[in-house]
Amino acid sequence: MSNNDKGLSEKPSDKFKKIKDYGIPLGVMAISLVMIYLLWASFGYIGPSFSNQVLSNQQETLREKYNLPSLENEGGSESEVPPSLREVMRSNATQTSTSQNSQSKMATQSSTNTTISESSGNVTSSSTKEVPSQKITTTTATGVTLKILEGSSIQGNPDYDPDKLTVKKGDTITVDNVDTMPHTVTNGESGSDPNSGKLFDTSIINGGDSAEIDISAVDAGAYPYYCMVHPYMTGSLTIE
Image (cartoon, rainbow, N blue to C red):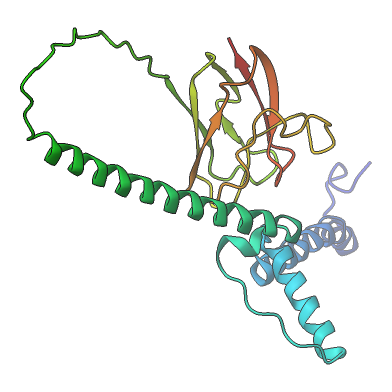
């Protein structure tokens, strides 16, 4: 029987034992929580840019150690692109600029030709011949939009919207990259697929930019696609 059952008060040693049994674990838990909070307050959230910062610090340390010249600072979205894909981005940017210049020259020439035709139309002839009007029928392709969602560069986040896109043969697919990171829409399962990029490929689309996919030469069927920069981003395109 305990002292309480016998009507006797507990001894001080019994009270100390209870305090020891419950107090020490509670104290350890409190210290652990304080340490966790201090670590979180000191380091905070380690986001995707942490690896870039670590890499930059390592490069600076090695260059100082071996007396190598420092690298030029790279800003913008290009610094977040793997080095192996930077040349592709620059090449695509050059091709786009050249194409825009060519289109501008063609538009200028077309405007000049139109002006000449209008001025020569004032000449009258003695005989006129009526040409029966012909009915011209044109077919306009339907536009379909595929979005690359914001935050899709983080594995596990929603990436393409919609993931399963269904279009009709001849449709024009516009790809809008609303993320801050560069992405692609490339046919194939992954980079190791032997048919990767042979049917359609947008190349690098920088954050906030758009591109178009031409499927006029692609047969009806289901085709998987992925992002060359982030291969875990996948989707499927069905052409009816």
